[in-house]
Image 1 (cartoon, rainbow, N blue to C red):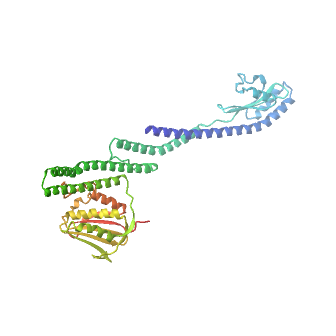
Image 2: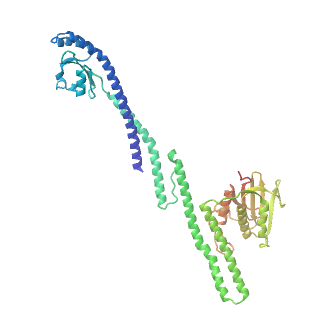
Image 3: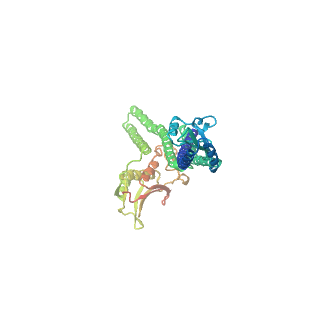
Amino acid sequence: MRSLFFRLYLLLTVAIVGLGWSIDQFIDSYDKQASLTTDLDIHKGTLFLLNKELKRQQEGERLAYLNAVSSSFGYPVSLINQEQLGTQAWQNLQMNEEQQHYLNMGGIVTLFNDIEGTSWFIQKLSDSHQVIVLGPIINGTASQPTAIYTMVFFGGLAFVVFLWVWPISRSLMSLTKAATAFGKGDFSVRATTDISRPLHELIVRFNAMADRIQRLIKSHKELSHAVSHELRTPIARIRFAMEMVRDVKEESARQKYLDTMDENIEELDSLVDELLTYARFDREDPKLTIEQHNLVNVINNIVDKFRAPNANLRFSVLCSDEGRITDKNLSILCDFDKDAITRIVDNLIRNAVRYANQDVQVVILDEQQHVSVHINDDGAGIPEENWNNLFDPFVRLDQSRDRTSGGIGLGLAIVKRYIELHKGNVSIGKSEIGGASFKLQWPKQLQN
């Protein structure tokens, strides 16, 4: 990750500096060309007048005349033979063949020394082999302050790039560290969210993925543990009953063991159903069929299934009627998935039946925007210190494994997941009739 930072930093710095230098060179070259063009236009007239005046002088007097008038110029003016061009005395005046040909044709040749910042303008006298040399003319070089300012500019530019790149690089290093630890089995590790803004969404997605993976792994372990302990119990009972059926001769005893096998098969079927339902929640949320139903009728149908098998208990379904609680069979219309709500209420009533002494009560309240269902019993209740984790998977308050407690602690976890799909919630409290009270609440309108 550090190498990524340095490569990105170096790439951006070189690109920006290189681009800046190229543009600077282009502008400088253009300015020099424009400057030379302007100077040539200026010195062209000077060379024309000197050429004209020297032609009027005798050949032997030309040098003296030129020396006399050169003091009027701000730069040296020389008259030399053409053969002296490029010699040691005039080594700055080296010309190529094209320039020499242009000079012989009467043109003005311009020479420039980039290092010294000087230029020369050369023209041949039209009636001799002598040439007029204007120069060296000092054009000036980049001053030291200009170079310093350029270095400060590029250095500041590099610093700005560093300030932009470093937080991103540090965030990527943090994410890489978290991903490495997660890959090595530390499923509790999370990437810090105190990071560069451009990467915040990536970190949030990574942490959400890590949460889901951790939950899936935990669920897998818990399911494996539950299968190894809970499913073996009814299977062992069935195997024992089968062995006893083979040995007993009395029909009554044989029927007893057959009934035992049937009960354990039902228990086994219920356990498998809970396991499959919870496993499906881990893979994906089930699709609900949201329609409007009369909630009172649905709950009455559920309660009726428990009346005959539990004749020792009193079941009552109460409704809210303009703020008053009544046992009238009213109509409360709301949106829900009928199968899901049936499973939820059935599970909670089954728990109430298991622990109730005499009464199981269902109260349905119409709360304008919401509807709520309370399932109450008059049993021993649930200790308040256990309320927070009661809806976690595989939590069983009764640690015994006898057949009366039953289940593997998935029923209430499934209830919570289903009611959350209805955009609602489930909670636990104390019942007015003495035992536990489970409260379901969800919006009355769920359809778009």
